[in-house]
Length: 188
Image (cartoon, rainbow, N blue to C red):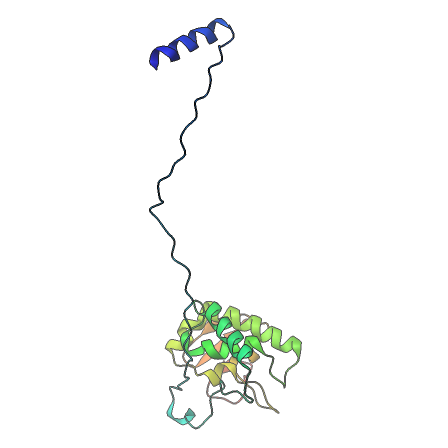
């Protein structure tokens, strides 16, 4: 083979035309592949139970309790949303977050709902793990404002940036403070 290669190089260096050599057929590969991919399997998500960390909040019904029975397709959509968010939302808030993303609460406008979802996503990206660690309840974060009552932190943010977050409060870049113990947020 080497001598054939040298001869063809000499011909090419002189500028002569190379003689055509026929191509021999190569037998097809008949080996069985050694790797087979496994079929993808979906795992069902388990329903989450919300437990409040403070004793006085035990009498308050959980926000995740649906007002009406949901159809199987709605439940499937909520489980799908929970699965999509599982990596960024702490487990204690996951079901409520998925439900809030799935359906707008009756007492709020579309604009308020979209703003709360955006604010909530930003909040959980930055502060979600600390909120769970410090025992912020589902009600303290998600409760929808009702007739003069404040509601949860996600509804109070209203497009502001959370500058500081602690076990008992959240402070925003516009000077407002959300205190867990007071009925409404207050200006400093």
